[in-house]
Image (cartoon, rainbow, N blue to C red; front, top):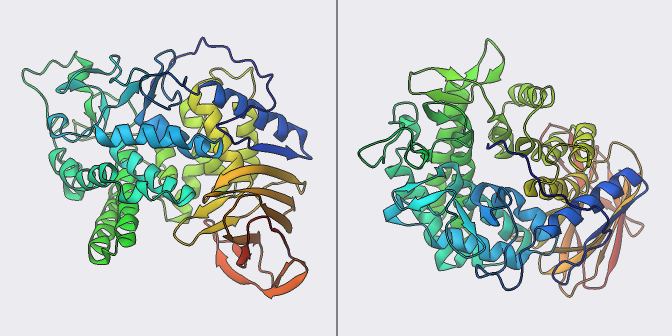
Length: 478
């Protein structure tokens, strides 16, 4: 990640900022949480583009003051942006990334696009000389899949521009950059270099960086890229299933598993109980930033190794880009108090670079998907929720745009929640609670609870209930 310091000052004085007809809000008996949300929301919407910008709807997701959006940052920020009502911006920006994939660029897109609709000159000279991290294609593919799950927008699945991007990424892109599972450690560090090669020209040296970690000399492969390919392929398999291509989906799923096995078999350092994060041209493994993405792409299935990785993350100080991923990662992996502390840190005006665009959107994700546990799945028109607050205090999130409707959600504590469907579309609600309960009471009526396990092996109790437009439904356990 590039380590720069922002000079932009953002005033945290706006408690409620309108966002494209949607005004998501958060209140809580924990006033520190409430202030943190307001700060993150105000900052995030500060970066929304202007209506007359040539690029179309967009929000800043790159190093200011480039007035641009970068593939990695957008992929991370997108669901936070969707919750803030920036759906048009997401659709436009991801559409531009998808549309600009090309054979001349070896099936890369533009790493960064600015508000004029052009590739940002800070990262692009011509189609043979530009900055590009290979993780980006798979990160974008996965982000588009997650946007479909959140919105139900079929364009992310069936749109020709998107479908072409997905297909080229999992086929031609992998071939031309020599990213097959059995080639990861033997490939050339620069398989598509333009001759004569000048190692001092970053647009040659970094045209096809095999990692998001940009400070490792002579890197041949990054563990984070392996994890990104794994997750991207799994997301593509799910897209294929929606189109009825179950046979191809099965083949892609098996291919994804080969990458995960590569991580487990070749990247774990048993002497230090940590994953190596890069492999260099001298044939040596090493450790740098990168572990964040092993968790972000949910590539770690060994619970002991996953927990060692989590502990390593919160036992060290990381740059602000990495840290902005931590709220959601920590909530989803059972470290609720750590997640809370990271949200307080990231929204503290005294924190260096707290106003980097990615930070505020990462905090919004932490609130929406992490703390409030809002998890939509457009395949089933279902909205799952679970409260991940270490303190048993109430929190409410209102006007959340999801699944073609809007909802208000209140968690009174970890055993009682209420949802109000304020939109015009019926949805299925899956209220979930930590623990093995026999019944879940829906509007006072006991229903037999079903059970599953969360990512850390804990028991989850849940049921499904239809929530019509305008209807309010309560769920609780005893």
